[in-house]
Length: 79
Length: 144
Image (cartoon, rainbow over all chains, first blue to last red; front, side):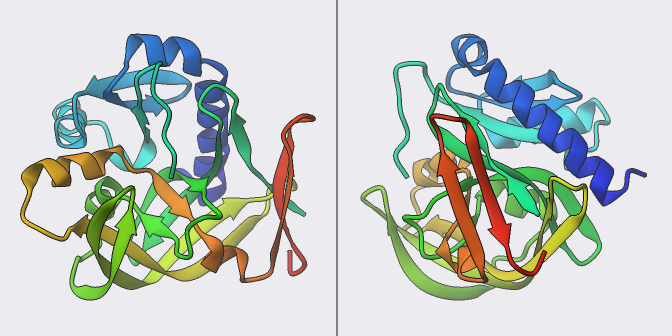
């Protein structure tokens, strides 16, 4: 089992990878939810319920993936 | 020591990688820094991943022109990593939002909200340094 520090280190690396590739990711996965692990998109779906189900079917521990919502390239989110 | 904040230049969002924890469960996630939010908010999906109960009703929250019912969970831990590879753990009451009415579409729209790091966590003594031009953004706390 990974330590908290190892989980956070990989989380940071995955997020940096996501930010670096966000343009291409938004074009390919617009309006979807994706799961990222080890700098790869390992699953994608229309909503979180479907995504979590896919991860379960693939026997992937969802606690060890980053889940990100991908908006359309011509959308911005204001919180 | 500093907690790195990552800037997504395309979507113009500041994100902090974190471990989110309740007793006996942790998940990898990230929080979007939102100084416009008084409270730190856990998104609906991560609340399901963690098994956080939606039991204790708290305030009504207005966000994006919609009204949500908030639920409070007190024993919530957010773990960050510093630039010196040390762990910083903050225990903070977390809010989870659900639609105020019974509209299923509104529940699905909750999928789109990220976790938000609000002012309540910054009030614990963090300084925010944000120089986007030079790509240097971080939180700094005197106790770390």
